[in-house]
Amino acid sequence: MAISADGRTWFLVNASPDLRAQIEAFPALQPSSDSLRNSPIAGVLLTNADLDHVLGLYLLRERNNLKVIAPNAVWAAVAGDLHLAEILKPFCRIHWQETASSSQPLVGEDGKPTGLRFSAIPLMAKAPPFAVGAATLQGPHSVAYQFFDERTHRRLLVAPDVAVITSELRVALNAADGVLFDGTFWSDDEFSKLTGKPRTSKDMGHLPVLNGSLDALGECQARHKIYLHINNTNPILDPESPAHAAVARAGITVGEDGQEFVL
Figure 1 (cartoon, rainbow, N blue to C red):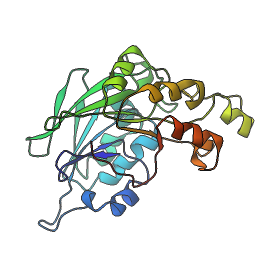
Figure 2: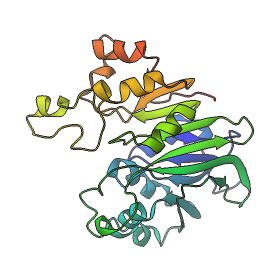
Figure 3: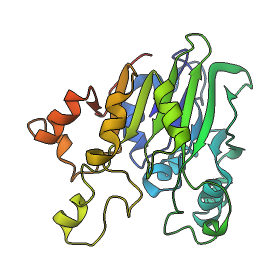
Figure 4: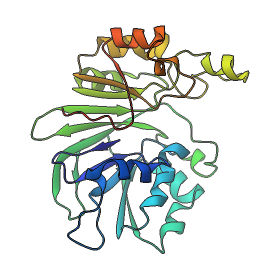
């Protein structure tokens, strides 16, 4: 996911392994022709340290500076257990900024405000399996982000990994003009039924859509309500399925690659 207040300076929320293909498919994220080395990507905000959220950071190694915004425990997993800082040190300078629950400005590489502010909402989650050292640290291992546009006063909530809708997350959900929400699984037993493995949606840290997030998002008054982080077992991906129809009736969109909207 990429967000910008002016269409020139962009911030990513997580960096997936296919980040290069995403950049190639979206001209606004590509370097301009006014210098030999540049990028409109001013930084990356990590919601957690899952591999599908962080491996794209290695693809940004050709920047002069790479800003990564993340909770302490998440950064410890990425920099320590995955050795990101050590591996990228010969290529670029990494600047880590710890998240905060209070609203903070998002600044560009030149240090100037970009018109966006953000705050982090701690979520209930465990460290990923590879995070041996970071698993013992205090503080959240997963967060949602609330963005605020200083010009339009509109709010965007980004929450791709939600195990439980906490009271703080519900407040942010009800205040949002746009919501990108965890749609990993349709039902709690979906994964176990299809694979035979005794793991439920909740075991893996994802609130299912059915009997989970569907009602909460349906009641939300946001102009844009979009499910993302959708597993390939989820029937909402099939436009002809009853699950997809239930999501549509609730006024929620099934997210697609390349989808754009303006708050």
